[in-house]
Every structure is written in structure tokens, then in C-alpha cells.
Amino acid sequence: MDQKTVLVAFGGASPEHEVSVITAHQAIAALQDSEYQVTPLYITKNGRWLTGENLLDLKNFEDLKKLENSSIACFFGQNDFGQPVLIEQKTGLFSKSKSHPIHAVLNAFHGSKGENGAFQGACEMFNIPCTGSSVMGSSIGMDKVMAKEICRTHGIPVVEGVNFVEKNWIDNQLSIIKNIESLDYPVIVKPVHLGSSIGVEVVKERDALIRAIESSFKYDDHLLVEKVVAPLMEINCSVLGSSREQRTSVCERPLGKEELLSFQDKYMNDQEAKGMASADREIPAKIPDKLTTAIRETSIEVFKLLSCSGLARLDFLVNEETHQFYFNEINTIPGSFSFYLWEETDITFKELLLELIDIAVEDQNQKARRIQSYDTNLLSQKAVKGIKGLKTNK
Figure 1 (cartoon, rainbow, N blue to C red):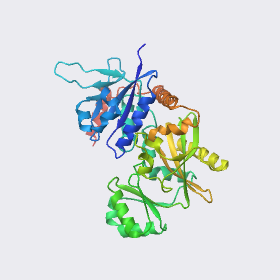
Figure 2 (figure 1 turned 180 degrees about the horizontal axis):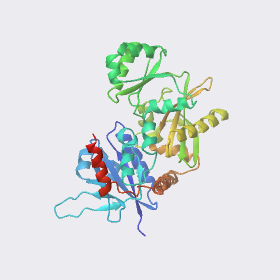
Figure 3 (figure 1 turned 90 degrees about the vertical axis):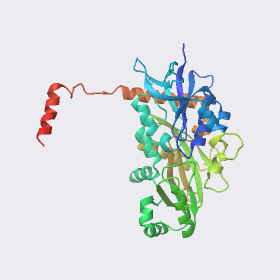
Figure 4 (figure 1 turned 45 degrees about the vertical axis):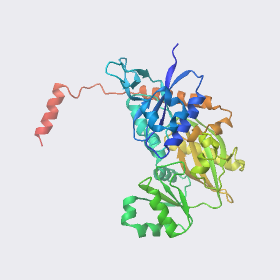
């Protein structure tokens, strides 16, 4: 019996491009000897869609130009049976394009267009099961301000902050600074739509604040500045499931040179490409059972509230002395799929990925059971006459 094809989609036009490549290859390695045929779908930094066996070898990514030139352009389509397929572009005048029927897509993008709902929308257009959250859940999860406003409305504590877009900053800089300084220093500056601590900086005075804001605008046109929680302890928890049922991993306490983890702390602690799995962390987090329970329960509450599915990692800021905690952000496609948290919850990386694929397929099946069209031809002769009549009445 032929193996079903699972596309591992990764890369993309994002500052987190390289992190996505690492996560994807961790997943590819974990799916070896599984029931699925793994096919890569690599999106370059300038948006080209590529496939080919050479993309399965991480070493080939050391020379991206050479890799792109040796890969095959591809796109989504449908075969004669209406099945979604990945179609390889013809390489010669007399060559035939190959196509691969798609069982599901394992989404390994981080940030920007791969994690914010845009790629998920393309999959929905072709009725392709895609791991992770839907268009809405993905877009809300990517927007730190929107996610926090929803949580705040439902009584979930979030840190007080000020958000603004670049045009506001240009026109009303002094007013925005005044609002920020009402929070009291130190404050933390962060892009609204990025992860991996890119563009994030803690500042303690006005000149540093202005420099940090100008720097963060290089990555995003919408920024969030929040009051720093001190003394700070970060606690993370992963949720696996769908709207039907959910469960949580153990909690972790990430450890960096400072309590606030940088990009270097998260991804550059090891010479090998281990992604988030290489970061220093305490698993399970050595925190009181009451705090663990509260964070795990809140993680599920936020996961459902933001219409998430598949796998997510929720990050919380905790006052180390009072144990007051605040929802910080949700990562709808966490680095390394947070497999290290689930291994401590007695689920192997391979089992985790297989369950993610099963959830995506079931989510798509649930959608397919709904009525997809209305059995009335609006373009029938009678209906068209009606439309023309409306036009003459103007």
C-alpha cells in the first residue's frame, strides 16, 4: 500500500526563517520510518515555493542560492479526482509535471506569513488539512495586542502596556513617550507580530526607549511597550488538542543569562541545530503545585478562547515573590514544536507529530461535513434579469 504524503512546510519571508528550517528538519527526522511519505515544501525568503529531495538535508541550507537553483518550483492544485496535490513545475519543454496527492501539511513556519493565517488560508482554499490553528486562531495568536485584549476582556490577567503603530509614533512621539513613562521604568519594547525575542529590548530611561522603539520598527510597524514584571520568572506550558478536547504538558521555566530570554539564549546555546530544544530550562518547573495547576488551567482557557487547535505554547510572566502571573503570548507554532515538554509528559516527538496530523485531518473532516454551497443558481436567466433590473433602478 502506498504511503500517504505529508508535506512539511517551512521557511518563508520572516525574520524567523532559519528557526523554521531547524524546526522542520527536527520534524522530518522524527517522522522517518513513520506511516507517511515526507515531502518538503520550502518557501524561500523572497516567497518562492520549492520542493525536492535536496531540501531534506539540512546541510544543503548552508548555501541558499545553490539550494534554490537545484530545487523544483511547485504550487498547490487539484487532480482529476478533485484531490489536493502539490504540483511540480515542468523542468523542460517536453517534460511532464509531477504531482503528489496531499494527505496533510505539517506547518513548521515561524512568524509572519507562515504562522499568521496567510498560509493556513491557502490550505483552506484547497481543502488541505494543515496542522495548527485555523486562519482566525493563527492571526489572533500572532497579534500580541489582540490576543491580550481578548484575554483581558475575559478576566485573564495581562501586563499593563501601550501599543502604537509607526505613523502614530511619527506624529505623536512625545505623547506616546508620556503614556509609556506613566507605566514607570523599566519597560519592555516588543514587535506585535514577531516571536523568538526578535526586536525585544528592556529599557530603563528615555534615550534607550527611543532607540529601542526605532530599532523594533525595523521588524514591525506595530509595537507594544509594557511594564516589566519584577522579580521576573517566566513559565511556559504547551497545549495539545482541538475545540473538542485539550490537554497540557508539564510546565517549564526557561533559563537564560538574564530572566528575560534573548534570541541567543533560545537558539544559539549549542553548535548543533537543536532549535528551542537547546535552550537551558527547568522541566518540570520547580514552582508550587497551586501555581502549576493555575497556569495549566489558564493555558487551556486561552487556547480555547483564541480558537486554537493542534499544538501551542503559552508563555506567562510570573512575579517570583507574589506568584501573580500574567498571560504574555501564545505561540501557535512553537519552536521545535515544544517536543521537549511533551517528552516529559510521556509523549515522544514522533507520537506528538502523528497526533498533530490526526487532529488536522479530523478538523478538516469536520469542516467538510458542513454544507459548502447553497443549491440555488443565482446566475440563472431569471436571477440575472433581476440583477439587471436592480441596475436600471439606480
